Length: 508
Image 1: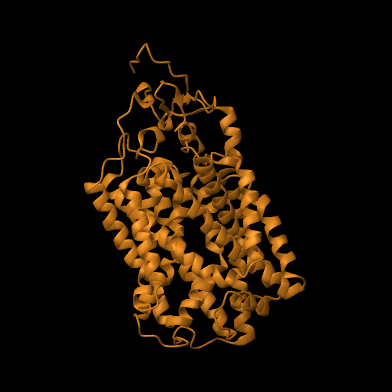
Image 2 (image 1 turned 180 degrees about the horizontal axis):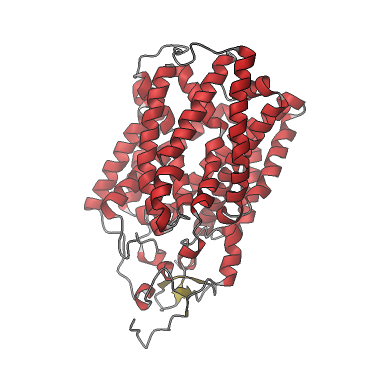
């Protein structure tokens, strides 16, 4: 490419910077675009993501729904949710693999450099809350079986989990979760068979009626709305799918992140949860699943819970740490290794466990769920209407974006209305419909922002992308951190200094 003789020349290479590769073994390009050389193999990524299949939360949420609206309505809501999750994650997983962007980096384009700071904060907080829930399940199981002080079990659960998430997706989490997956599946089979032998077959488990009838909304719709509360899985998808290879998009969008995964996660786990608690005649509660496993398998049941919750918490703590890192780097201008943010996430989780976390967990997740569902709606609208600004990518480089976009206003307004509807008590139906209303509002307001709002992409000076032949293969040295990253994320400052995306955010 022709270059301006008055501009400092790019320092270009075509192999990965050894220092960047060394950092990536734990950092996983948390604040950078994932290069093609760091993408995971098909089964490597599938095994790492498969950690989310084994959460006890999926058993609990199905039982809670069945208690509220009955098993037949829950199955309908579950099936509709599988379709929705499959379609949405089909789109998001392909987009993330094509762009290599995290939720935090994509949010820059949606909400501006400053406006995007809220996305990783909400993401991290939600991941920590789920880590608290899943960790508490292990602690309760250990206390029920062995006795002792619950606070000490909480501490033990956090301390053993943190070292497991220091390694990145492709160098550790894939292998660790691949080894534990057969143990969890074997545990599920054992608990179903043993419960049937001990308690007999619960004849009415598929047709059980709700504990208390409530005709405010159709039961299937209530169940669907319950599953909408876990749309954080869409954000999880983006931060994992960015490691996917282009050749594997078909597999990942249908199997790893698509309908096949949710068939196993929602239907298999959910139906086993309903069957198990009906066999033991236990009402759905945060600890009901624990009681059922221990009554069925004894100590082996405790081991199944440890395996399942350990797998899911590798994902929770991993994503909490990467998004805490992204938030702190952008807002606080604090740059620490991801290992440090793993420790921070653990400390926060333990402190939350010491409170009456189960008393406010669902409300906190409901609030955060409003922001999450609004984010998902906005991301889908953006991908459909403005998927790329140039080079097949959204513009995410800080020097080329406005601080705050009209899209940020759409996100905040839709979320504020969603929270208001959730908290009001005058109209029960509106409170329950808040997630759906939030999605429609967010999508509509963001469409208006794109249609009538100012373009957040700025026409600035020269672009390093124009100075290389292949923006995905050429590595360009950053003059600030002295490390080389792919040209996709490189930019020039007002004084023509070449900077990576992370350093550019600091330079603003």
